Amino acid sequence: MAIYKILGKIVMHKNSLEKIDFMIHQLNHFSDKDILFDCWLNGKGPGYYEDSLTWGDAYPYFKTLVRDKELELTKEQIKSILRIDVMINTFDRILNRSEVPCDWDGEHQYILNHPYWIKTMAQAKYALSLLNK
Image (cartoon, rainbow, N blue to C red):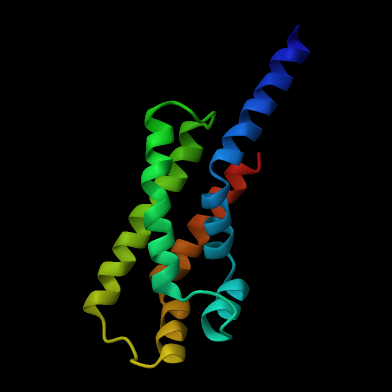
């Protein structure tokens, strides 16, 4: 009986992760400076603002899943994802008050090297580590 309980939890966790696959993709993206460099500076993907908007579009769905108790995630896992949203919103406000270079490469280089963005990338990496348990 105990083995079924353990396997059930594993399946529930896997189903939860499938429901938030779109957010896990964004977390992978945000957590890896090399991927961001390729996307933002080598033109292999969207820029910061598009990534930020993609996150912002997906986040309400995540909150609905949490509110409706459709995810089998721990409080720590949920908080780590909620923190990313707060950090991205805070970083957007920082950028709005900063003198950011006007050219695409300069702007994205500025973002990649900004101390608060580096903290945001670390938080995304931490959230992913919790989801991979």
